[in-house]
Image (cartoon, rainbow, N blue to C red):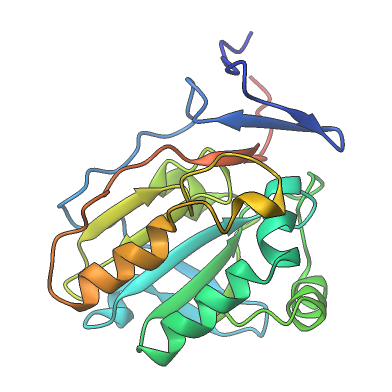
Length: 212
C-alpha cells in the first residue's frame, strides 16, 4: 500500500487528488546545480525534441493535466500563457509535458493536445507527449503543474511550484511570488536563482499503474 502523505492543506477538487509535495515520489528528484536529466520525446505535431539539441538555450519544463483544478487556475487566468509568451520573447524554450499515463486523467492524444493549445491560447514551444511518464519520472515530478528551469549549459537551476501560494483560487495569483518568472529573469541576467527549490503544488501526477 502506498505511504502517500497528503498534508492538511491538500484538497479534493473535481475528484482529483491534490497534494503539496507528496512524501512519496515515484522517482528521485534530480540535483540542482547538476546536468538536467536528458530526454527525447515527440510533440503533438510529430516533431522530436531532445534536451541535448537545446544546449545553449534556457529551457522550462511544465508538467500538465488539463483536468487538474490547479492547472486550470493558471490557464483560466492566462497566467501560464502570459509566462509562456514572455519566455519565448526572451529566447527561452518552454516545453509543456503531458505526462499522464494512457487512460489516466490528463492523458491527451496529439489532436487533443493541439485542440487544448488552441482553445486556451497557450504558447509553449511544444507540447511533449509523455504517456509513459518518462520525462516526469526522470525529473521526479510529483504534481501538475511541476516546474523546472534548465540553464543554457544544460544545468538544472530550478525545480518546484510556479508560484508561492498553493491554492486553486485565481485571486491568489496576483498576491503570489511568481517563482518561475523571477527565476527566468535571474537566469537570463546571469544570476543564481534565489529560490531555486520550492514546494510544488497541484494534482498528483498520474503515472502508469504497475502490475506488481
